[in-house]
Image (cartoon, rainbow over all chains, first blue to last red; front, side, top):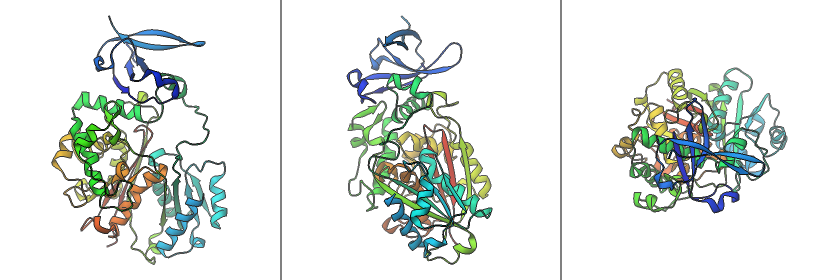
Amino acid sequence: MFTYTVAFRPTHPAFADRVPYVIAVVELEEGPKMTTNIVNVEPAAVVIGMEVEATFEDVGDVALVHFHPVS
Amino acid sequence: MEMLSRVSDLAVRDAGIRLRDVDGLIVHDTRMSMGAVVLVEMLGLQASFVERVDHGGATGAAMIARAAVAVATGLCTTCLCLTASTRSGSFGGYPVVDLSPTAEFEEPYGGSGANYGYAMIARRYMYEYGVTPEQMALVAVHQRANACSNPDAIFYGQPLTVEDVLASPVVVDPLHLLEIVLPTGGAAAVLVTTPDRAGHLRRDPVPILGVGEHVSHWSATYARDLTTSAVKPAADRAFEMAGVNRGDIGLLSIYDCYTITVLLTLEDAGFCPKGAAGRFVEEHDFRWSGDFPVNTHGGQLSYGQSGIAGGMSHVTEAVRQLQGRAGDRTVPDLEIAFVHGNGGIMGEQVSLLLGRTP
């Protein structure tokens, strides 16, 4: 987990029922950074430096890469 | 277009010239194709230099830098730099097809607009260097005090405390509502001309001593460093060109879309060590009457962010101050001002050093 923010206001109506949600930048073991959501965790429990792993959510005909804390 | 026409008229009257004396025009996105030539036509110009600048919040400062180059090289002699935004904002309010990778790789995660990027910068800055919510709030408080000396500021007459800022709703953690600019409508025009012509105007001209620019990224996700920004190379270049020192600066007029923006700019422009901005805010008084005046018009946080014209307000305020006509908030004995524009998510940086007529 490189950095994050907790959005308390939706940036688009599609996210209205998801607030508060975590937008984050994660640094992959391979090097690149990417934007994602951190899921399956209370926003208050998210900290920089925590280890996270990818999980996939099907949205229509695409899949979004989310991350959640390593269990 | 009417706002742009109106401020054009105000600017040339203020300088004591006629529109027909203007032979250069720089404008930003005017919501229409060919907006620049339409403006040339509307203003009745015959121009030898016309261009459109697209640097987001840094556009105003970037216009001045480009106008200076155009005038210095003889492409034109008197260049009008124009900015305006209606309440709905020149950043939005009309259909835009976003062809950047953010549309595909960030917006599906609820990341759009500028708020979340700056929030992630603030969160990382807190992690690396430590800054308290109270120190960040203090930036907004100081600037509000300045706005209370500026009848043109949107928050004129509405003082603010640290407690007020921290009690306002968190929009994107860790940024509170009162740490984020309020979109407003407004317009600003600036004339840039040759030293010869400048000596015969109605107002004391303000010499452009140095300019510097650095553009590095769009999305915060792809910034090489989130907490040390491209302000540094832009500011270093401007100071080197001007041949002046940080200690010579009597006013900072720096882009402040968020409180964190001011902290990063203070550090990366070289006014305090890296990681020390939080303490710096506590130890100095940013009010026009203080020991370290910053954003004496209130900054965009308290003056209002009128789109691209909000960025230009940092130029117009510095010019007014250097001409000694900033009313009750005039900084005494001011010689040199540092003006800074910031666009995107800290990825577009333009610094200006402006002086005073001897």
